[in-house]
Length: 143
Image (cartoon, rainbow, N blue to C red):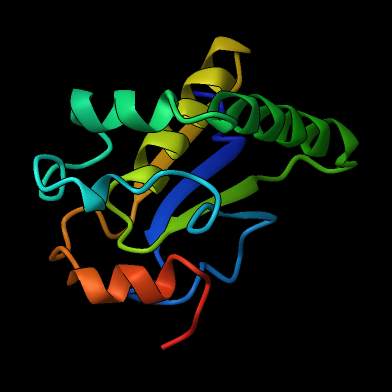
């Protein structure tokens, strides 16, 4: 019998729809980390492609964010009196690059800690947003 999923990590793009409302923790990574969308060689790739993944994970502060978020998920699981799921949402502008690589990093860290985790990439297959959208939404501006 499989053990229940304890943590669900969802990547998404603010340019497509709001953050998932059910998240216990929401990371907005639009303003703080380099955006692979700005490099034409990476624009149509995703955070699951090695060049994008490496670019995101080598951005100063990203690995620490992944470690801290995984620890926060473990803390929330330990603090819960009843067995429930912890939901973590990671959002960038388009939901294809930074959020995907960071979400996958959190999933990997949690799996390494022996936690049963699932990942959902809500917007990874959606169309790439135009560059003007990124410039506006990278600063946290609303539509």
